[in-house]
Image (cartoon, rainbow, N blue to C red; front, side, top):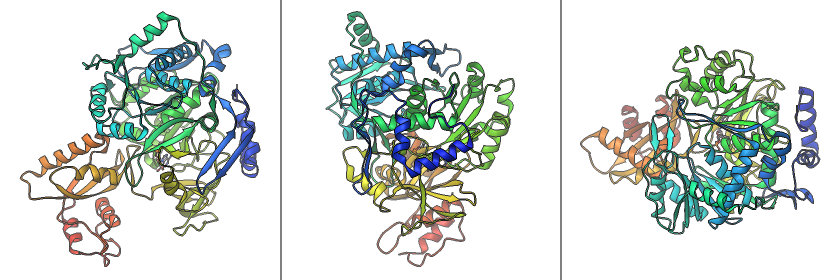
Length: 637
Ligand code: WT7
């Protein structure tokens, strides 16, 4: 079965693309009409990129969970909605049908209500990859509470920052999370965060890992107890809250080049339409297919392509608690074999990491169910592309290289499986409705082919970022002020002779470490919190597995006895302030940093040194003290 808005041939893609550019409103109106709306919209689109102010499907009323759950109950009620594969392969997996998932969501929505959560309230969700995470997310959406999922790898300080920014009074968490051989004491991390957040009223804790926790009277309650209470009372209204198309659906924090992470806000109607539309078309999902996206729900990929996109179209989505390399590097392939996975959507960093184990972990694994492979998060290098294609897809599964961002809500540039051709290392062509533009530093559009520039998008699409929570001006300056009337992505890009796009990486001070987005300024601020540090500068460098590694140049107060111990202390500080994902891979102690006369650090030079390019440093004449460059070059790690 194909979907009403499913593109089924190259000619259809061309026609859809043409129409979506010539008349975007007519185009999206047709797509949106195949969803369940309580009340249809009065107007398709209102927008300007100056403020910015973008509204889709104005006046439309809906609840996204009625689209994800209720509307499938009659036709797909007994079909698996969510397959959950545990961290430990010896433990049983869980399968929730659409009916069961609906039931769980409705119950937990009632729990949230009974604990005081109301429409518009912000609920922070800090859990491992357990089905209850999906249930909590959907339950928030059910009652119109704005969820803010925080990845389980972030520290207490990071959580506190996000709780304060969003003024979130409610938290849903677990006692702990399992990740391979490790356990993360989530509730303990939350308790540390809450020392700084007295406004938090309720913490709902799901019992999972048996990690000891301290439950604070009046504040902390057990998920299971609350659900039991609701079930016993029989007092569940089950009704979804009617939302305006433009009401916020969720906040997701992401790093920028300056300051603390910002809360990207997505709204209900437009996000739903685009997540589902892009899901069906890019992966060419067919009813009955098993879709396995290996991302964590703490990132946008998990929001759009584990939960909302697939569930909106009645797909079966597989959620995996563990990591690709535990108990061994065959874990993904066991899951594919066991559940007969049809679509596997993963990240280049995972592919490279698995590649390093060779093909032995593939022995005896039946991968013949696979039809489509996907990549996301960073540019995929050709070597990894070919390994994925040859050993996993066996040359018969198209690989979709999907470029997008937290802010875009859904896939923007990608080939469509078996519809438009792949080209290794290229995201290739824009989806219908997406108008990429390349510009030079002065904001002048670079037309024609075989050209490079900064990647911008011209016209709004339904799931474009609406604001950054609590600070609309930040949204404007970050994305809409660099180039007038364009959304600026922060990525550099090449357009080849045939019009295919190849993303070349960030042009701002944002790192992409194992597909995780981290601001250099954020890491510097964390390093600078260490008592022994005077100043630091952080840049990215090419890393075989992570894509980019973190290289820190650090000036210390005085000579310390043990360089390695100090390095560990600094890394520990970063883990404490941000999370282990932001720990520098290399720390070089220096006596000075290359600065311009106005005091600006010349990262360009540091980046070259970190990359190992020590001869062609470009113009260094504007440096305050050119000698420090020689010292830094000599001390390179
Ligand atoms: C940045 C966005 C979108 C989900 C995961 C990351 C980079 C993402 C690709 C790709 C080259 C990519 C970009 C982008 N990126 N996908 N297929 N090819 N680069 O979301 O954390 O918001 O990061 O990831 O640099 O700007 P995110």
